[in-house]
Image (cartoon, rainbow, N blue to C red; front, side, top):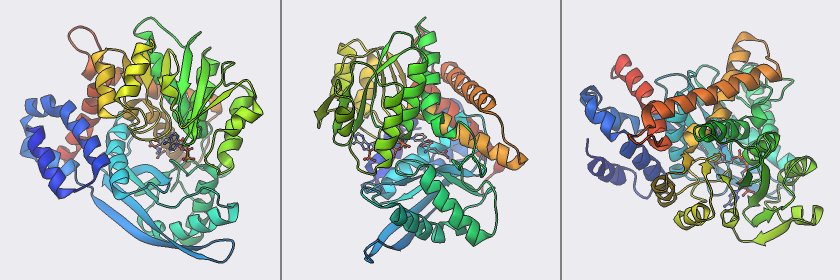
Length: 445
Ligand code: NDP
Ligand code: 2IT
């Protein structure tokens, strides 16, 4: 297998899809060796097949705002690969959404879902709708209009969407209500549902909790733990919130959160009521973290800056793709950071990743470290199928075990001769092998 040749072909086939091509290159570079050792993959043309989505739906979403103005957005669902289970992956509502972004996310999701050990294929969807400044009623009408098209393509055993940026419990509620109305069915077609109507306990916290559990496993390999460590978190959404809770519970001090407007540095630590306040900030739909510094005056707001300039032991990027670049990575390493665990999808640029690997710090790619979110979605599907619900303790234990297992898989495939674990390589190979073998088993159709 020749990565450059394959990439050239993919660039021609997917022109301008920068994020998608970035995600594919990372995977191909990691799996080159195992593909060369397993000629059956090339014989079945697995690489070309796994980099082409099974199908992509795009649709018009028309909705009316509170003043009576009519708006048009574009909706998408990318069903990428269902070799190991029904399509599964989140929905993102953000003005930056393009097909390239959803294809990168859907592609990542194939390997992430494979790593969870649960039977889930890879998919992603969303819209360029901007939730910023929208009223509750507008969000509801948009979600209903979106589902009016999407419902034809999804189902509990077909494709199971969930949340992502801009889609949390409220949006899943509106989407589910409309699905139920249209399909006349009450089932596990979406995950991240409310706890009184089929949702799993711990799903809201799961991505952030899982990320911290994964980092905890990485730290253990060097005889370290979260106790007494300082942590920089980016973002102030669902994932950042869960990560802040768990890191604090394990005895660390969370010093930062961030939004598109800048970052907050809180020398006293972001814990307790301050974490609850993050939820209020996010629910305001205002896209800013600055108000935190009015609410808690010891905290400083750094306009237009990123949290990676703060001296910390552990960094948890939990906002969005490519938010941590090579120069941020160098600053973190120079400041003594020992562990970077991705809560977001692909938040570190390839240059940043290179810096972490060269310096041999503990570094986990999102498809391993943020898999606790979709892992717990898988647990929600299991509970829905059995028509029962597990206690908080049971779900958290299962989530913890999933993250421990993913860590083991990464070590299995990523441990180098000198003992250093390349988690990027480990995650990509472990995720790929299972899906590729399933594709071989099932033949060409
Ligand atoms: P939310 O919408 O809850 O939060 C996203 C956060 O990132 C918001 O605070 C958002 O602000 C902020 N943000 C967006 N762009 C920037 C930027 N350029 N700089 C700083 N902050 C920014 O989404 P989630 O927490 O659910 O998602 C965060 C990341 O985690 C995404 O990469 C997502 O794909 C990933 N993820 C999510 C999972 C889940 O279960 N929800 C599971 C696994 C991964 P704003 O939107 O106001 O711009
Ligand atoms: O990126 C992700 O893994 C998610 N947004 C969660 C997907 C899911 O189906 O729970």
